[in-house]
Image (tube, rainbow, N blue to C red; front, side, top):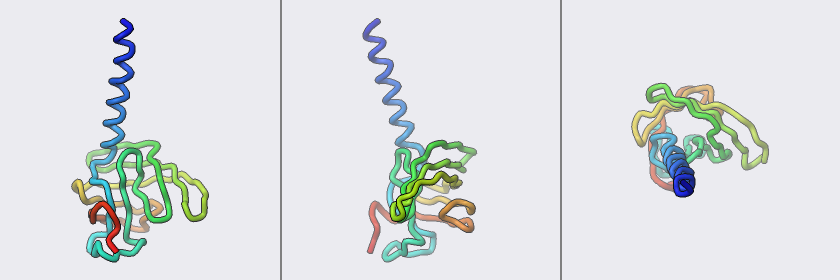
Length: 128
């Protein structure tokens, strides 16, 4: 019986880690607005996604997903964010539609989009 008690938490921990790592079905790295060259893309046209509970970030913020809901290929993210330049924290919502492992549509209304914008993958680091 003692063995079962120690194994169960390990199984739950492994399952939780797998879920966290696959929170969004996107390739980790840098994304730019579709139609924008990867090399030399401006900060305004660039977002990043690094997996786990990472919440699609721009160059000024670091966000962590606190709640995620899914409807088909559209994901609604509640996020806890920090503006790294100004040093203040805030909560927000973002909605994205995953088009493929390397492309997503960021819906207007989020902090990063005044209108719907499609982003495409550019690689694991910014290309200068």
